[in-house]
Every structure is written in structure tokens, then in C-alpha cells.
Image (cartoon, rainbow over all chains, first blue to last red; front, side):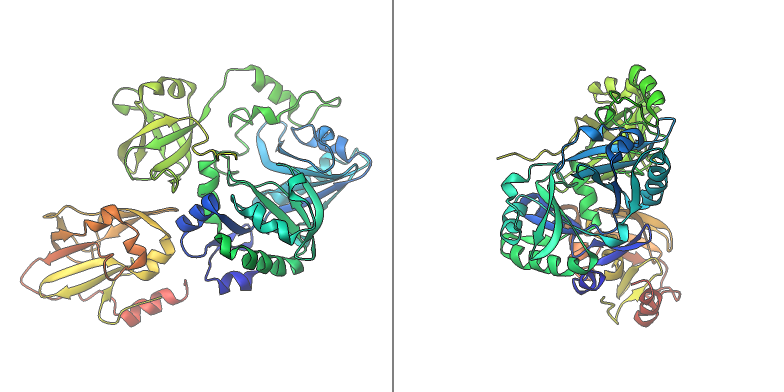
Length: 364
Length: 130
């Protein structure tokens, strides 16, 4: 795949030991293509961990915040792995591929942690945990045209593949696990293949999608797409010092599990307590861009720090810079008065509190 | 990557063209490609004094922000106001319509500082990181 990205003129970036395409031509054009037509992403750096065995479901119930035993085969669930103190170790998508088979998809940088933790947490269960990251390539096709481009190339009836569902089938004659998931705020699919089949699948999609406006898209576009969609990124909105409640994602924590789960006690306390901070959206009045780590200011003359920006970028869809930030509950509340600002390299730039997500696709 | 032979360069990826005693300044094709899509350029005010190797503005792209350095001493006589509406000119035409500001060189000379790089030197500087 690397040769193909280089042929396309990609700017590559080192990421968790992988060389991945950051952009091909213009990340703004790639972003717009995904919103209006379709984009093709190589996400092979993502980790794939297989959990299998008669107690695989019970092991995942114990290891993760979600109730994976309640997920039907063929369906997927967004969930998290937490430490004993409730801090997030990774956010995950778990696919149930059979009664006793699950595929856990982890962030590249966290995959070694996820593998080690899953192995440790599953040790009391009849379940086997295997890191299969090197055996899978992952191609995502995202955007309103994705379904129309993919449909003629697969033996699956995509009308039957609902959002957060995934099935084994073929794409361009190659075996693939086809899931209706993504990280862009658009309809789309993620295709897990062998590394050997990824090139031919990529080429077939590129050819089939050209007339519909499909373009290769890099990680830079993926980041602005997920930011507009209000989706958290591990390392920005999520981390070991953040609980799912801080991130406004308490819904991924399920307490109705017979044997409890790692982090459950700490999270039960967090669930009852007043929030320590609130993940909020900010829209900027000026064109200067708030970046990760910049202070958010509030109060008279914006004299006090009320939070910190976690992600920020110029929004191609909205035409202005946007950001997500952790704010004190007071600031997230009092900001109705419109007194927030972001300290952008020493200058306070006005910011307006904005409900997340910034962008929601219209569903036909 | 394009590095026009007639221009001079800084290690911070600005280019300079001299016409009489007026220097025109922009950022290189290499810099524009490394930054990605430029979304906002903050330029010094017309009439402002600039000092060689001092920051006098900033260039924002999708992924990052970089200081803009003046390669020369002097007074800003003109800024490219087109960039306000279309900062993408920095990507599409970095040595042409993506120029950033013009400086009337201070002192009597109409020569560029000797420390600036030739196109060959600049190419040498950037070839390993491209």
C-alpha cells in the first residue's frame, strides 16, 4: 500500500511505528470530497485484536466498559477500556463476528496496551486473545457515495448491512470483513482484508469510484472530519486522566453486568458525582485557529483560565475555526453570556460555546 | 518541489526577490507543502519596521501554525491583501500570487543580506526532509 500512496504523491507521516498518508493533495479538498461524494482511507495502522472462546463475551464484559455479551453476532459497539481508577486506556469498536468470536479494533498507539490488558483481564475466562494487527489491512470508504460505489463490488447486500453492523463477504473478489462504521460523520464502510488483498481492493474502489468523485484521503482530513462530527480522539479528548463521563460518553459505561468490570467501582462513583469538567464545542470569531493545549479564558476581561483546548482546526464545512475543549462546569454554563475566549499565542480571541457535534449529516 | 534559481532563501523557508531596493517576500513551495492547506496569513502592517530573522507574522494551516520571519531589515511598503480572501494562493502559487509582503530595504544599499541562501543551498537544506 505504501508504494500506492507514494505513487499518488502522498505526504507521509510517522505514526505509532507506521508510515501513513497525511494528505495526498489538499486535505481541505479531501475533507469536502468525503462530505459531498466519497473518500478512501488507508487505516491499516489501527490494531485488530481477536478474542475467541466460549467465554469471550464474558471476558469482554469484564475487560471493557460496555456490555458486549448483549451485542448480537453481526453487530458492533463503540466502547472503552478503562483502568481501575476509571481513566480511559483506549476507545474501541468491538465487532461480534460469531457467538464466540469478537474483533476489537484499537488505536494504533494503544494496541500494545490493549493486547496486554485484554490478555491479563481475560486470563480467568475460557477465552483467547490474539493480536492480529499485522494480518489485517483496513480500508475505509466514507461519504454519501460510498454505498453506491461499494455495492457493485461486493457480494453482500449493503441494504442489510445496517449502521454498526459488519459481515464477512468479498470486495472485488477478495475476502473482506465489511462493516458500516467510520469516524467521519458520514455514511460509509470499513473493509478489513489481508495486507496482500488491500492493494487490489484499493485499486478496484478507486476505479469504480472515480466517476462518483471518490478521492484518496489522508489522516489530516480524517482529523477535521471527526472534529466536525464531535468525535473524540484518543490523546486529545481521551486519555488515562479522563473518564468516559468527562468526555460526555457515560453512555458507554454499563453497570448491569453480573461480574462487574475493570474500573467499575471508580466509574460508579464518577457517575453519581457532579462533573469535574465538561467537553464543549467552541466556534471562533476570528480566523486564528485554537490548537491542542491552548487555554480557554472566561470571567471579567477573560481574566481566568476556564479550560483547555483539546482539538482545534479550521472547519472546511463551517468556514471558521472550531475546537473542542474541556471547560469547568461553571464556564460551560455561564458561557451562555458569550464571554469565552481562547488564548491564541498571547491574544484572547473570542469564542462562542457551540453544541456538539458541529456537523450532522442529513439523513435521506 | 520548485526552487527558482533567481530567488534567495532563508533556513526558515522564506524566499526573497530583490527589485531595486524593494524586497518581495513569501514562503517556499517546500514550506507550503509541509504546512498543508494554508487557511490564514497574518502579515505585518504596511509601514511597519521589520528586522531580519525576527518574526513579523504567522501562517496558519489546517494542522499547524508557523511564524513568518522577515529575511531583511526595512519598512513594509505593501502587503498582499489577496491572501486575506484566498490564503490558498500560498499553496497554489507560492512564488507568484502567493507572495506575502514587500520591504523597502533600510540603509543606503540595495543588496540583500549576505547570509541568505542560494537556490542550490536551499535545495541542499531541504532535500533530505522532502
